[in-house]
Every structure is written in C-alpha cells, then in structure tokens.
Picture 1: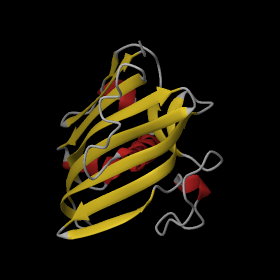
Picture 2: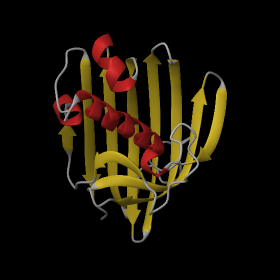
Picture 3: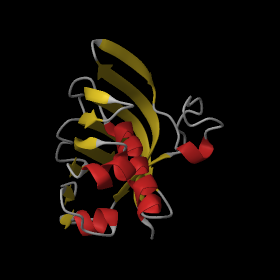
Picture 4: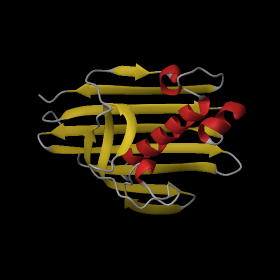
Length: 192
C-alpha cells in the first residue's frame, strides 16, 4: 500500500475514532459484569515533518480511550479523544467526546458506530451533533450531513476481536518511519 493510501486510512481511523467520544463518562462506563466490554486505547504521535504532512496534515498526535459494551440487543459505548496538531492549515489542541447509542461489527471485522452524539471542544467553542457516517457516504466529506446508521456506519478501523492485543506502528501504518509511532490496544472482558 502506498504512503498516501495509508495516510487516507489513518485519517479515516482518526475521523472514525472521533466517532467514539463522550462529554462526560456516561452510565455505560465500566460496562458492569453483565455486559461484554471492549476497552480501546489509541496513541498516535507524529513528529517527522516530512512524513506527518502526508500522514495527517502536520505534526502532532491523537490519543483515544473508548469502550464498547454489549448486553443482549443493547450495543452502547463511550469514547474520549484528545488531539493536537501543528500545520499551516490547523494548529491547536482539542477534545472530542462521544456517547455511542448503537454500534455493530462490520463485515471487515471492525467496530462500526451506527448512532450517538459527538461533542467537540476546540478553542473555547463547544459543538454537539450526531455522529456522522464515513466519508464514503457523504456527498461532501468537508460538510458531513449523513448521520451514522447501520447502513451508513462510521467505521473505527479498530478490529473487534475477543482477547487483548496490541497493534504497533507497523500494523497501523504498514511501515515504520522515524518520528512516527502508533499503538492500538484492545482488551476484552466477557459478561459474567
């Protein structure tokens, strides 16, 4: 896969995982013993100006904690995303919080968010909106209008496997570049 294709995939993961975040911990936090629970941590740091411009538009990083819970027909979750970028187009830090009201495991094996709300905080501005579908469903990805649903999901790019595993920079980007690191950890706890 070419670097630009991987960059698109990484940006899609960032955007989709931004579909995982909540203004404050909701009642779903912790899942409880009666729910299957997946806890997800993502850390992506990019300090190589040449590579980071193509991978994510500039230096900086994204740090995510998320949780998916399943109990019978109830699929809910939460996520918190913090990010900071430095580029001519975008500089600054922000936070996104999501309250996930529904999700599914896609045919590709990834967690896909199919409903919920997203609260973005950036430079003193707070905006809450529905979780939007992936760019592939949007008439104009710069101005999303299609709300995530089972037929137009927001794919997180994070595999929904049972067990605990770690994905490294090589797994996430398909290559290893100086000044670039990425790690995704997923831990699963079945209901008791």
